[in-house]
Image (cartoon, rainbow, N blue to C red):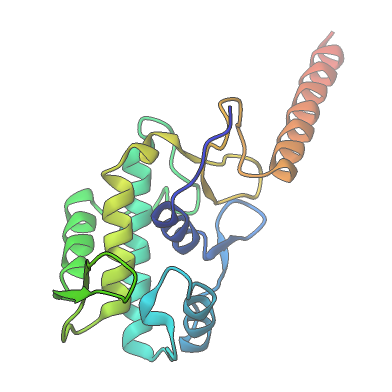
Length: 206
């Protein structure tokens, strides 16, 4: 059996995975290092971010999204507890109350209004659209995080503990242990070397 992944879950995971490993499990690279990086990332998610059309980031938007990412990764760590969090965050996680306050605050940045649409050959539909909110992008990301963390997909969230990986992932099938096959290969090689080292040490001690 394979699981599907909702648009909210994919968006929030993609936000969390904008950090890269440094070869030792920490963070060395970040897709959101400057406004240009955020602009590229947002426009790449135009299919799920209504605020993406024509979006160009500034320093304020970058700071808001990076702050939100910190809250999301802290709450991911809580979601998978008592398992270990990603090594990228283990020493610097936000306290849960602060992460929750940051996420809820971001979700409230865009008030919405009901908008009725009724096409010629369609049923009437009411949708909620941003009114005059201060930060529709951060609010959209935060609301996706709220939907994911409060939904059943959260139960499939895992941290990948393969060597040199700092990613979170959703299990796509029951036997999945790693975020991608290359991480599984690295983990198996590391286990083999560790067993070989122990065996060699035992033989040397005789």
